[in-house]
Length: 598
Image (cartoon, rainbow, N blue to C red; front, top):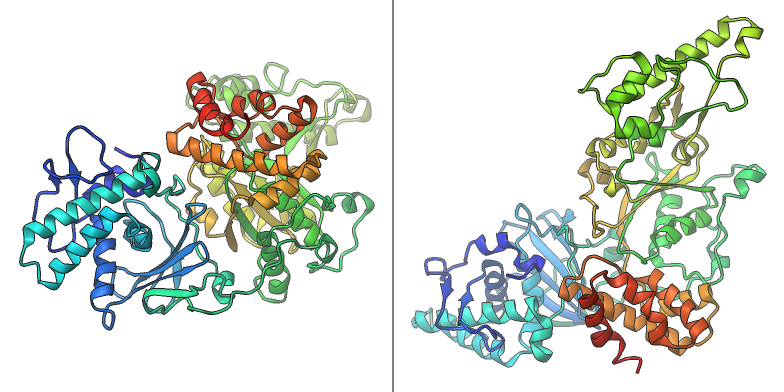
């Protein structure tokens, strides 16, 4: 069975809509022409059939039925009437990228995220939005017409209606689950593994970014049909951006000024970065200015460069901290380091203080070093607290002993982490990949740090308050192996959550040319298109033990500049990164690289 999010195992238990809700859902005597299996088998899929019937109702009763479907350039735009009273789902599908944008609106117009999960949404709205694509297939169109006639005839020939319904569901399943095996009728979709579909933002709703220029069916109530979208400049001049969104009149030291990023000439400023800077500046006059932002997206979408650009636009120093699976809360709060200029002191039973790695990997032994007791049940946090206690005792001892004796004691100094520096002095701090942290309690521990004007207690006992200018930018990729779903309490503290789109080929070409110095724009463009095709091929064939993105493209171009051969350059850059499996690499070579570079 396909692993596509629209057809995960739980979706097959979704209720079948009337009038097909009381029949067997599996048949072995009928199938779609796209079903190449030896044994005929087709299955009714509740979400698929719900989307089809909603579209059919809109076509049969346009004056009374709710919902709408339209188009704008390469996008299909839809408003789907949910089965929940008063709720409408808005969906945008990009034919080129295969990506969705979707949100839910209640009867009062309040917007919430659209999540494709067992306890969330079924995906019926997405099938509804895909109807124009489904109808481009001859078999689907023929059976849709048959089912529509049966509906108009009040389903007097139920057997005929059932046959059509089974073929329609099987047709959709085969074309989405196996797009490459369905000739030109396949439909390639890209849906995050988390099921969290990119939502609409208030900004793009207000500026009519998604506005159907042609209405295929129904009447739009939430999105404005035919409204001209706000113009978005393809390239933003860095001179018109750097420092233009400052909200503070502070004077920085020379060291702090050196932390304010300079935007390189090759960098193409994305609209998402401008949006964040605008929100941070404009809301500064409010009682609760926006200072916490999250940028999600696949590797290579420019999240870290975007965080630096935000700091440049705001005119604030930039620091960052990178999380790992072993990150603990004290890694964010700061560390006590020995002053190596002082003589060592007997601070523990063994005469040796445990390191943070000792505490992380073997808490009982670390605790034994501190107090001579081996406790199998001791936690990392408890050992860390004991370490702070020992350090504090040593500090007090230094303060009471005479000078000659003091010189024989080891002294310790507290070192701010970049996170604490930003909180203390009002910088932009990028928190990289917090979703990879293994201990879920660490993310919850971030809550007090993310609250505006929150107080933080450092390991020294000092309490500091978050500087009102501090901007936190969380950058994360939920599709990375090892990444976990972000804690909802953390997400709720983000003022904006922006999903970064993969750069277009034009942007990639300009960016990579600037980074590498390669001036052969045609070759770079061809390579950029190939990298996108490789990434898509990996998604189709479920190659998940590697990666292929902007970093691999940069290395590929750099290697090409040396060896002057695209295939040779790809051997140890793109292909080596795609997979460690020789069969997977051979598939990518034959399907994506050789057809482009002979």
